[in-house]
Image (tube, rainbow, N blue to C red; front, side, top):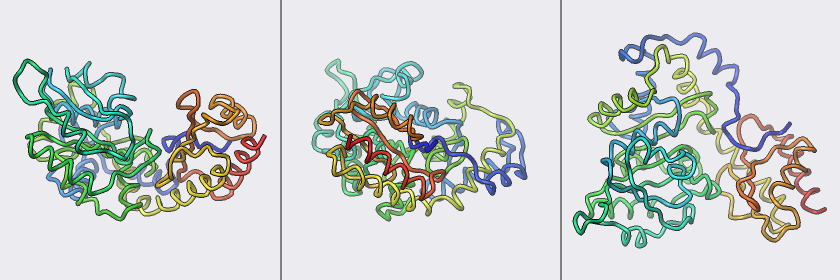
Length: 339
């Protein structure tokens, strides 16, 4: 099977497995795992922040960060398709007591003036806004990259209103490779970031919360409360360090493969938006096949794709999909869409 459902389906490479097998470990709850400490220091430095904290999942990393920024009962602003309110099962409310309000889903095409107009100050018996969250790249926005100018304007708005700014950077590595923006330049714009190792970078597990030393010290308590304190976790951190060393620049290959798939499906009028990174969004509104039917037909031909809605599907390229598989996938999709 050719699996284009997600970049979360990757398996550790031989080199990554070797790094995991030989990792030096200790008890991380006691702060004694040297490999975890090295990973945290490396990621913090990449983004120009003081500290970072390893977490088992991207959802936990996001929710830890949000609890650092938004007191219980106060408000987070984000877009309606943001991972933090779409795919984290109400965690902001359930665990942090955080109230969320959203602007219309537009992927990476954010209107800063619209966001500024949504900010609620203290007083008037309204829920006060405390933070803004954005997603880079944007998952349900087809892997779109938020322009640096937009992020700078959101930073200005946050500063003007004394708000925090969080980045769900699960795929920020793709934005870095696609637009050439240095990671430290992204880091300078945000109070906190969550960055994922287990998607395009190919590690089996792991994300990190990035921020100031003070915030990360608090984050350790929040992580423990949420059940995220782990022991000899250096075997997983070693996979992350390997990924950072060998799998960041190769993301350009995944972008090129996604562009090939986009070129194949474009003549059928189903490409939902321009493809910038490794996600190819499909809009089947005007096609005879709906998303479920296309996915079932593709599976029968040995190709797995994601169904995101009745008429919405998605293809995601990653390091486990070689060039010949992309060719076969493109041929399969062309045949099915033409029928």
